[in-house]
Structures are given as C-alpha cells and as structure tokens.
Amino acid sequence: MKFSVLSLFPEQVRDALDFSMTARASDRGLIELELVQIRDYAINDYGQVDDAPYGGGRGMVMMCDPIYDAWRSVVEKAAHDKEDRSNDCSDSVENCKSVHTIFLSPAGKTFDQAMAFELSKKSHIAFICGHYEGVDARVIEEIGAEEVSLGDYVLTGGELAAAVMIDVITRLLPGVLPDEEAWQLESFSDGLLEWPQYTRPRVWRDRAVPDVLLSGHQANIDREREVSRLIETITKKPELLNGQSIDRTLWELLAKRLESDAPNDE
Ligand SMILES: C[S@@+](CC[C@H](N)C(=O)[O-])C[C@H]1O[C@@H](n2cnc3c(N)ncnc32)[C@H](O)[C@@H]1O
Image 1 (spheres, helix red, strand yellow):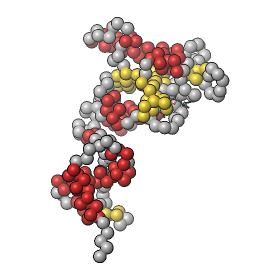
Image 2 (image 1 turned 180 degrees about the vertical axis):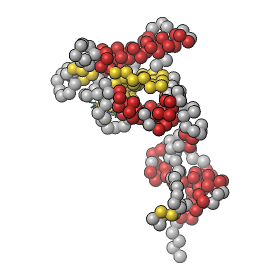
Image 3 (image 1 turned 30 degrees about the horizontal axis):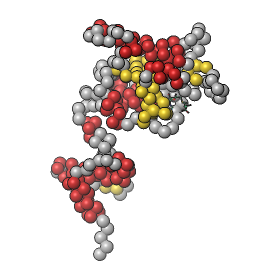
Image 4 (image 1 turned 45 degrees about the horizontal axis):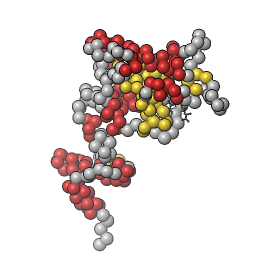
C-alpha cells in the first residue's frame, strides 16, 4: 500500500510514523510513504503558497495551483508506474483512479474503523493536508477529493490527521500485525469494544484480576471475555450497540453475570 502525503510540513508525518508498527511495516516493504512538499510547487521564487482570503478576514489561505501541481505530480507518477506494468491508466492523469485522494478537513466525514477497513483495500492513497486558515475550496472540488475529518475539533494542520489515518489503515493490512487475525479481535472490528485487559501482578492495590482468567479453562475465559466486552460497550459507548444484533446466548450470559454480581440483601 502506498501513501502519498502532500503537505507544507511533511516531516511531521514522517516523524509521527517512524516508530513501532508503522516503521516496521515500512521496513518490510508493506507500506510505502511518499512525502510531497507543496512548497516545491510554489507560484513564484519566493516560495509563495498562500494568500489573503477574498472577502477579508484574518489568516492566510493555501492557493489552488501549488496543491494542484503537487497532486498532479503524484498522480502522473502513479500513472507512469502503472503504465510500466499494465498500461491501463494512460488516457489522462485526471481519469487515473488508481490514486484515491483524501482532503483532511473538519468538514469531512468522520474517520472510523469501518472507513479504515474500506480504505485498506485501496492500493494508493494521497492525503492533502491543509494549514493556516485552510485551502481554497476550488482545488478540492477540481481534484474530486474525498473530505475526511478526524473529529469535531480544529487541528493546526492536516498532518497529524493523515498520520493517524495511515497508522490505523496500516494495522489492517495483511502481514502487518504478527497474528493475521489480531485486528479482528480489536475494538470496533465487529461493533463492540474489546474486553478489559490485565497483566501481572495478580493483585494490585487490593484489585484482583477476575478468577476465571487464571483458571486455565479456555472456553470459560472466552465466555468471560465476550460478556466483559458487552458490559464494557454498554457502560462506556452504548451508542455502538445501535442497530447491532447481539447473540441471544450472550444476553443470557450477561443476565447470569449481573445476577451473580448483584449484592445479596439477606
Ligand atoms: C487550522 S485548520 C483550518 C480550520 C478552518 N479555518 C475551519 O474553521 O474549519 C488547518 C487545516 O487543518 C486540517 N484540519 C483541522 N482540523 C481537522 C480535523 N478535525 N480533521 C482533519 N483535518 C483537520 C485541515 O486540513 C485544515 O485545512
């Protein structure tokens, strides 16, 4: 999977990803990170890439041309690479659909695990990172980029949002996690949260690990974990259960657990 990041501060993305899982995935050739400095496509020798907003107001707005030219360089290179192999992307770079382009924006659709899963099926994603007051809207329309937000708050730039998305998508790629199915057991993969995790010591500040986890009885442990993740979801993120169909046996196990946890009045 190839990620191209178009930005005025591409080092921020590189630095954020240069650790742990993403660094290993890159070393092993499972992902490729291409950083494109938008300032290399400035409109003049002074390196200008932004200007004052029409209509007045504070701050600067990133101009169309530097972003468009930077994006074209990515798409042209991709078309060229692909032509070398299959020659099926030769008509026009604008029509080349092999690069899925995302514009990071607070106005976009909010990124989540389901979107990450869909994006993990692409072979090449380009991220356009805005900065300052934002980006001239016309270039995003012209490119036809998908607008994606990290959440309902305002970041200084799109760089950290791009790094977060690349991290999440990379975890879903075949061969990245040590156990191929590991991500399927993680929070959100089937709509529920993961169960609470524990490690040594067995008792910490009078808080003991649930006995069943020490029983060595795998079927009981699995059942305990299923009930725990349902409780975790109901108590911490009940909205995840909207529209979910939960297995009847799981509700029965939950009822049993609540019964056994209930304080005895006698
Ligand atoms: C300071 S922000 C501009 C905010 C803009 N003036 C507004 O009020 O919506 C600069 C850039 O950061 C990125 N950004 C900010 N918040 C974001 C978010 N929640 N998700 C994704 N990108 C974001 C966008 O690329 C944006 O163009």
